[in-house]
Length: 86
Image (cartoon, rainbow, N blue to C red; front, side):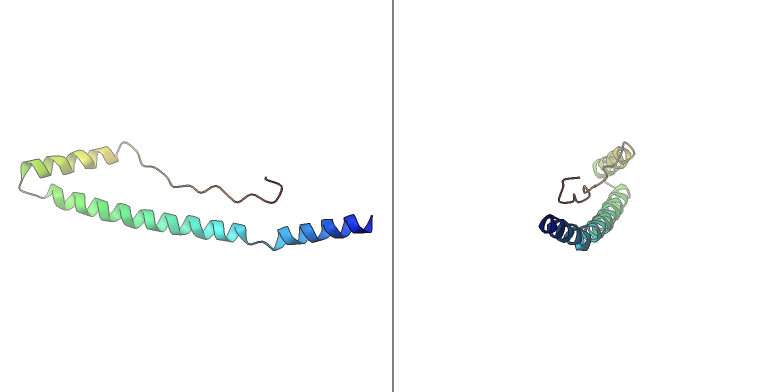
């Protein structure tokens, strides 16, 4: 009985010391920051394209800017699971 208690204590202590959630939060922040920088660069490029004197380039830029209003995709990482799979 003591052996089972010791094993359970070690397993629970091991789960409490893992730092998976902090890694998860940092990954979410990093992805969000990277996505924001990429989206800002894309918007800047489309804005410059819309200032072009070439009507084809200008029409393409306006069309792509209008497509942005349709919706954006959010990047999501699933939270880490504990050793029981929850």
